[in-house]
Length: 271
View 1 (cartoon, rainbow, N blue to C red):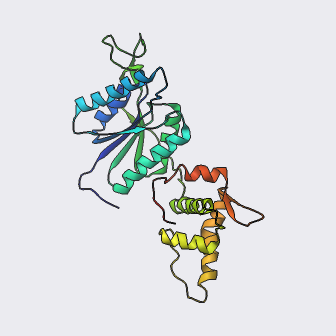
View 2 (cartoon, rainbow, N blue to C red):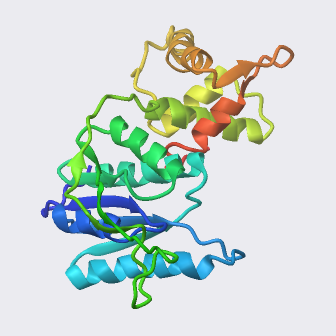
View 3 (cartoon, one colour):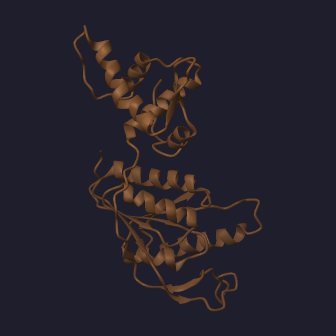
């Protein structure tokens, strides 16, 4: 894992129809990098409104400090699975770069799907700090959430100081199990009957096998036992696979397909 010399303070937030609810916490936590998630439906009549709010947030951040790195993420904020995948990917990549960086997740501003996914992901990673901000002053005359000068403000005209929210541990899916499952899916997609010996080869090729080497006389049997114990039985337990009664091949369930399309999607695998 790469460790950078500078300790970063990373913020993750969603931009829909709020500005200060996003930008004030960035100032409060003295963020050095900000991941902004937003979505613009090109066919929507409200396209320009969403764009105005996003651009205003970026302008406010830059006005505060031109040193802050802004990373844009365009993803459908109304789709929970998409949000879970996007936020998990952001945190996972940042954690791979360094365990020393502070990561704050704003769970106040954005769609309900973003807020739910952000809260769940925050609980999956130790040291990630979810926080909320409450409105101090509302826009009483909230004409499309713009101020008298035509600038986007949002429903909240001003907000109170951010407050971290209580954490409880949620175990995210095991990386090796998820990537092993993706190997199974990719292999099945090529029309192969994925035998245990082939899966063990693929797991070793992708550094997902940690059982070491066995004596030559017992290697095949021992590895088969551990493959079934470490991977297949866990996949079955989690309802990620079922065994086809005719081919005896393990096939992904809808739950399994959803898992590999949500977690660790950016990791490259070899076949």
